[in-house]
Image 1: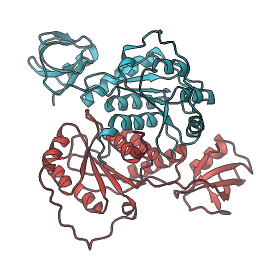
Image 2 (image 1 turned 90 degrees about the horizontal axis):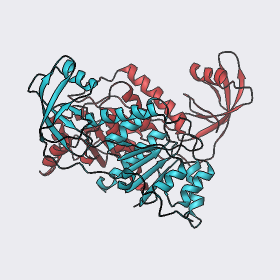
Image 3 (image 1 turned 120 degrees about the horizontal axis):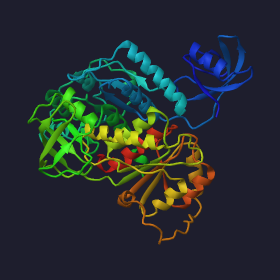
Image 4 (image 1 turned 45 degrees about the vertical axis):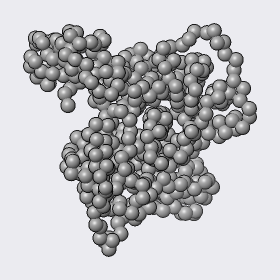
Length: 260
Length: 260
């Protein structure tokens, strides 16, 4: 299959595209592209395009979009994953796997016991990891990286989402959720006139929430339960953030495909 | 929760245990254990034990098992995951996540397009990763790392397993499986008198097979389909080995827990 490159500008047939320096270098000096060579391009939308090298010098390369590639349109999973940011390479693993699995958006949750802050530079790195994972997995739409929220803000911003799950640690959270769920839930009064929320959030039909390594505080658990989130059991063991997020995403995205 | 340590010798109350040098160092010089301090031990069986420090010097530490900890016994998922070995850190991620998810055994598959050989030293590393992941996830039984097999050998060794799935790449394998499945399957004649197979394999009720990055060859796909394995769709995108293995394992282990 031809190599895939990402265009920051939206694509249409006949458009001329200049790749960013890193991708230009890869195409020029690693793949040694010649005039007339064909590659595939994607721009974060659901489609993929055929493009041809029309000019090049030592540093930059120019492509012309030949046509949109006819394929079944990529279907959105409409799944939001909101999780604490795990440390080091584990965050990269998380972002890469959520991209491969087709998750729509990732939202970093800043709860009381969150230890890893979500900086602007981390966000930029995450966006690069998404593009790399899209190239490899042949996904066209990008996993959207949303700005961080506290649990309160998240609950408010996701109040329109119909299927909402909290990934359970087998010990603490499940017990807490179990005891909370046995009481009648009492949804907080939300002001329907508030800002309509982010466009991306509005497209999500399902949400998965994963807490930090230290777990949510009792107050946070109460908040989530009162807002009507259901617990999603992920087995007998204590899962790391990225494992719970990936396993929960695999279940929520793919459960309908499982033969029974 | 107290820290957890692994004992290579089977545990029972009153038994004296000497930890390996690495764990001794951790307990002595990182956690600065004192005589009488309590830790939890596991030996790869389904139970966990309470133990107390009874003697120590600068290099080694001795524990006495006080009691078995009363908890619901750990339930085996009876799931075998057979996959090509991904490169570098991806293999560590795979082993760690399969351990957290509760998978029973991992079997490295050496198919035609497998690029990463499975050496004895890699096996020893993998066994250490399993122990580390067990400590962290509070899993007591170990993920068993089985010796590598070719697809032929695997099909023969797993012929008793009732639920067998191949994780599909959306492009090549699914198409091939689809076309093969439309013909009547023709299971190869197996000699029922052959060796009963590995004890661990005999305990597995479900199996998941994941091919190498380059995909199975057409002959390998035919072999697997003829042996009656079913395709397990994992979405629209091309998944890396470790992603397909983790997502497939999450589905097969946890599907019954998903609220519908």
